[in-house]
Image (cartoon, rainbow, N blue to C red; front, side):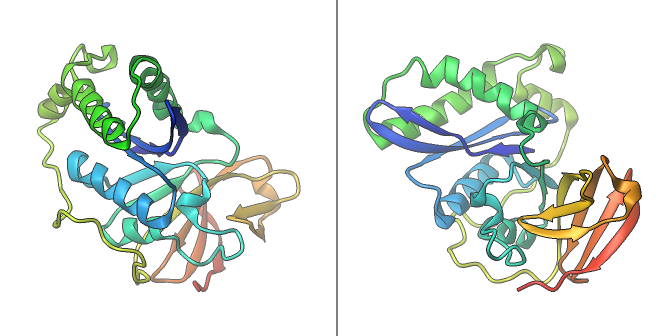
Length: 242
């Protein structure tokens, strides 16, 4: 599942959208809010999960709304805590490479053309109800050639996948407790300076990783930062969480 948090303008309303796509079925989950605060992010993610189901992996960009603050890179954000508490592993795409979220970027263009650019809304209630209506239309009526002409909901039915959903209707409240287990991942390009950037904290890596894309996995239970190249672990650092 991919996720992105674009800012858009709708009439006089300045709003923020959390848009998610299930990469397997093209089902979308949309949520609009008036800010990108920690609780708004929790509410948005929880709302989307309540309709799409809990993913195993969640791919997102490197917005501070998702990772927290570069001043405290080892303090897990509320978004990361929410994911780990519910068995979801976040995956942060390489920095400054938005095309890595190509599925959601393409969907956002479709969303802009078919909804935001065509419908004038003047209240937050209109925006929210219109957004949910668009989500329902997309998932039930829009047909994808990559799905063999099926709609996203028909594609889901064909997989016979048993979805897992959050156990409660109301989203967890800020601030969430620190998780005691779980993993999250960052895909990073190692440049010629041989530095690995983990939300602003730099680690020196072996020379053989120069100009390679690596996966940096942070294991909460082990308090380790593990570095992988093509699924082979190539380095490891102690990583004491705050």
